[in-house]
Image (tube, rainbow, N blue to C red; front, side, top):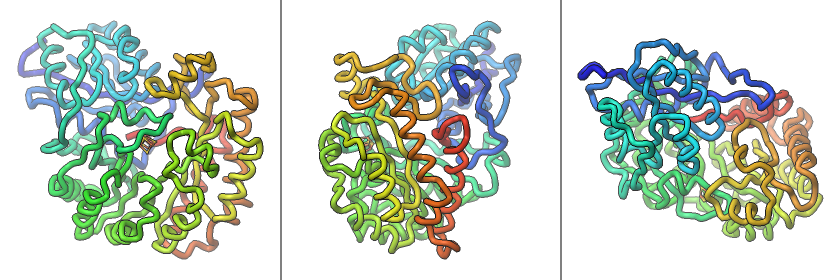
Length: 447
Ligand code: SF4
């Protein structure tokens, strides 16, 4: 490989539409400007000439003159990532791979690429590139999680063609990693480095100031923006003078904290996604999420509404102790409380979780290697109270019911009066389109 003239192509693969439809999921534009690509570019030493490629938006030229290809993938994109690797390796190009998928599937990925980077990129990225250049790649590089998130470089958005991301583009950024909670079904806390850590406020604010030249909408793509309240408050104080608009995910307990919500509103929050998971207290206790207070959901929603903060709720279905009427009861609950947006998920045992181990031991996983590989809500377990197909049908029913025009008019103010009303209408009409499409409903905007 020629020294001082090293060409690195970093690809975020798209995914195939279905096991029976191997066409690629493509869009002309995306709303979310991804973080992984420009951040990996920022970590790359200057002797490399870096090109970034988001395959959802652009096609890959397999004959492009490159020395190393790096793939960053979720499990949804893994099959496509392996096919991309095969094409480049056929042409003698070294391929390395990282991202959430390989955290639990390193050995599998190592069969398809020259080297796999497991865990956070910072401790291993430079070494992997040096080894690739020197033709001495090891099969697997395992990162020790960072103790602190100080001094991280600013993402290289200058390497992306931002025209492809639409006029209201939202920049994915990250101010923390990990989560202080330990929900039974959640794998994020493993591949995001375990312990909850956060970036210094001044570094985060300076980074946002730089990005602001390119757009002023941000998505804090992290497990729990408010995992440490005092630090989140400090950050939000720093956001106030920036005059930005932002959205994120945070835990339900913060919706009962008026001081937190007031500052969030003042600092420009537009939308928050909350994993409330169930309206049933016993189900919440069973998933180690008893701190979601079902008896106080109404109060939470009112607190958000009074501050004109748009929100969406995540639900999970498929638990053994579920009442057979939980689906209908949840829709009634959401309509009664005029909840702007919601996502309905089937309980899925992701590798590495306690849930996976229990389900596997009980022989209740249908096909473990296929978990999370395809878009849409696919039942991967043998539910206790119905068949997998019935479970999928119930979730589809919920989406269609919740995003029917009848339900939307029941839940959202018409005409929209506030900024939050408007964003809820846009979100619901987008979700409605997906709910009634044939390809399922979780083609989420990856970051
Ligand atoms: S609060 Fe969210 S991110 Fe944290 S462990 Fe639970 S599900 Fe995972």
